Length: 315
Image (cartoon, rainbow, N blue to C red; front, side, top):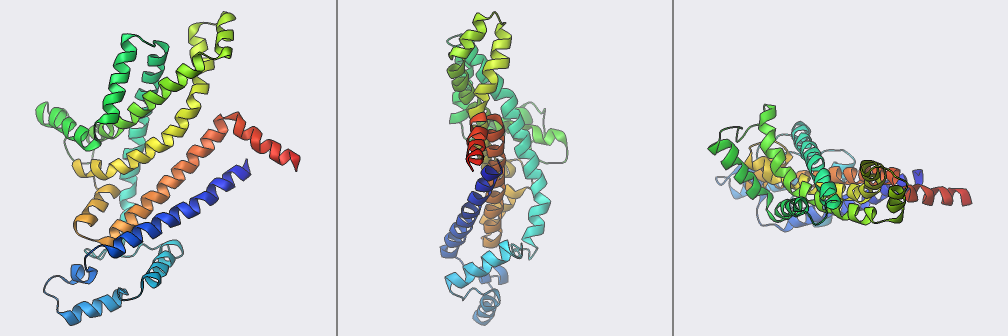
């Protein structure tokens, strides 16, 4: 089992480094002068050149890349914002709890609604309930997150006045963002759960359980559901990653000062150090989530345990 964990940890290193090099390279070639952004349009050519030398902007690409990798992964410092001159690391740490709370709440909503929706659709295959469930899933997969967010704001905030349209101070402020962020995820969970349940409930051991006289409730929840959840756990990691990416839009729509909103502000202001730091931070966080999902998968699926147990026994 420890070999499996170590293997997944080692896979994180090239992924995170690859994301770092990729985003640094993209922003390296993006038009714009950070010195001009910092000093403003009234700066003289001499002042601009002095600022470029101070920031090391005149150094070759590989020198700048190596310095940035050292600062991030050895010194754990993402640098300072070009606009506010504040520490980006401190800003990320201050904003991260809001983004994490939004993602976790959205994931919980998606699983609490999507899994029962898929189970009922599979158990009542071909019925009206199955059709309704799959229509909801189709809408969730097809509708863009930002559009869902706008519809929810117009209906529940502006039209009905039940919930606040923006803010983050109270629990009610997170209701609409969580629903908007979870809509696509619950659709994916429902589709995957239905597919997994349909495959499992036609298995021989389910037929045997029914032949023994077990109630349908026990057959579904004690025998079918645990095995059908195995592929759902894998999809849950991808779903969480999509929700993490959707927070960039959700936080902007609902004015939540999280990492997504911080990155959007950095893009609008051409604050490239902020954009780089946000992308890298989210990539690291997503890699950790996928590692946890892999560990959950290994705990649920006995085949993975058996695979590494046999290898250890042969040695």
